[in-house]
Image (tube, rainbow, N blue to C red; front, side, top):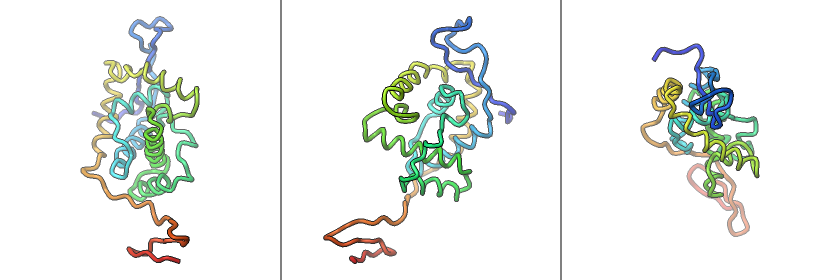
Length: 198
């Protein structure tokens, strides 16, 4: 498909407000295709390092629910105290992805790991905590039909093209860097394949 100047997507409108008849907003939301592309490609490339594999429709619904081409990625999306997330972002940047897109992929990994630990959907952890996050996740589930609507076929196809073309063939080993561990009262530090008790 030709590269668009603007990418249009129609958001869900479950209550048919403003004269709608198909549970979709009557006017499209405009997205920057370059941002959508860079974020989806980084998310796909990151799967070889532990980023969860998402379907293009899942990504489309994230963007549509937020109404933002950054998929609702906030400044606190990546946990800079988490070495795995920080190193993943750096690795993706070394692989050629820009910083914001790499941070998005790292945040997906971190939020997904937290969701698995808490046995909750990713959408609950994606944009906050507590009752507000539970409502966000509930609303997201209610509006998840948006990506299946014929109006959004070009939007989903654009994401599908750039996400699937960046998916790796196989997972790569991911090294988050040396970590200090404790054993028998001493400190064990990885030293080029050997361990030394100090």
